[in-house]
Amino acid sequence: MDMMADLPVAVIGAGPVGLAAAAHLVERGIRPLILELGESVGAALLEWGHVRVFSPWKYNIDAAARALLDRSGWTAPDSQGLPTGGEIVRDYLAPLGRLPAIAANLKLGAEVTAITRQGHDKVANEGRKQAPFVIRYRDARGEHRAHARAVIDASGTWWRPNPIGVDGLPVPGEGEARGRIAYGIPDVVGKVRSSYAGKRVLVIGGGHSAINVALALMELQDAAPGTEIFWALRHASVERLLGGGLNDQLPERGALGLAAKQAMADGRLNMLAPFAVNRIEVQGEGLVIDASLAGKPFNLAVDRIIVTTGFRPDLSFLSEIRIALDPAVEAPPALAPLIDPNFHSCGTVPAHGIRELAHPEQIGRAHV
Ligand SMILES: Cc1cc2nc3c(=O)[nH]c(=O)nc-3n(C[C@H](O)[C@H](O)[C@H](O)COP(=O)(O)OP(=O)(O)OC[C@H]3O[C@@H](n4cnc5c(N)ncnc54)[C@H](O)[C@@H]3O)c2cc1C
Image (tube, rainbow, N blue to C red; front, side, top):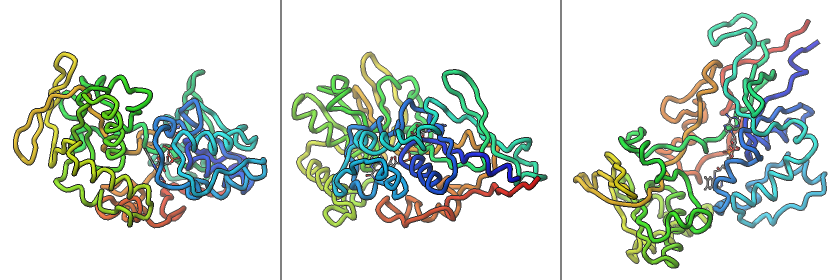
């Protein structure tokens, strides 16, 4: 009897990738065990539910997920349409999560805190291949253990935003100022409008999230003219970001760059580059930022900061299993050169799969 074969494959996270992986398992007759820390599938996408993505529906729907959904009488969205994060959850992930084969194996509000191999610490070799994975997770009822024959970590990066420091560390005062700092893409023209209308807002970051925020703040400025927008970049040039324009592989992304370029030319954005924050001080209702601008000391008083400096994976629950990571990119070594941001933007990453994503933990069959 193969003991491992009776166990599910654990999937950590019920975002687009975790649910697609679960659909592929179901298609192969393998039971998934999907553990999601949020109270809904697509919990991370709901955090930026108001933002429209660059990739049309045809790129967002996985083939195995579509096959399962089609059999349930689902109506697929227009393949060329560009959904918001909220629409991806409403029109795709939520129906997928409700399918019996997924729903019966999905635990919401379940945060994975550690993974190990049964009876083996990280160093122990003997019998390791045959030892099931043990997944520890906690939910409202307490701590639990589940066994699995393999693990697919699809936990994303959303809950671990990068801090403000250009050296990758929080700057002094960043923790104390947290109540006035947002990480990610807050809904400045919607849910949290009152926190930004008529305020002096500093946006930090040089990616598409930063453009998104800057353009949304300009929309807010149209309605609340007192709103002032400062946009800080660590590098002097934004050409790489804005340059794609109409030649961008994803036209919506190119259009975002062009709109930002126009706003800069119109002087609606106070550009600060190259800019590095040294320290933040809370003063009354506002923040005083001690920074350097083009290598010279620079002070700026603002009401709010929006940080869009990217995200990192949470590796803490993987410390007791054998993983291999590129020292710089923190991705599996075969994947790292394909996604290294020194050479790639998201439009130039080639397709990849199990060969690039697998870690060194091996799985063997136990016959008893
Ligand atoms: C504003 C914005 C726009 C984007 N636009 C695009 C786009 O146009 N095209 C594109 O391809 N990509 C886009 N992305 C990237 C997008 O986030 C990813 O493509 C997609 O969300 C990745 O899905 P995922 O399942 O890997 O991660 P996520 O969507 O982050 O899902 C991970 C899930 O794991 C859960 N989780 C995390 N830790 C644990 C834990 N310890 N235990 C249990 N569960 C856990 C999370 O709650 C979450 O639900 C965009 C991202 C942002 C922020």
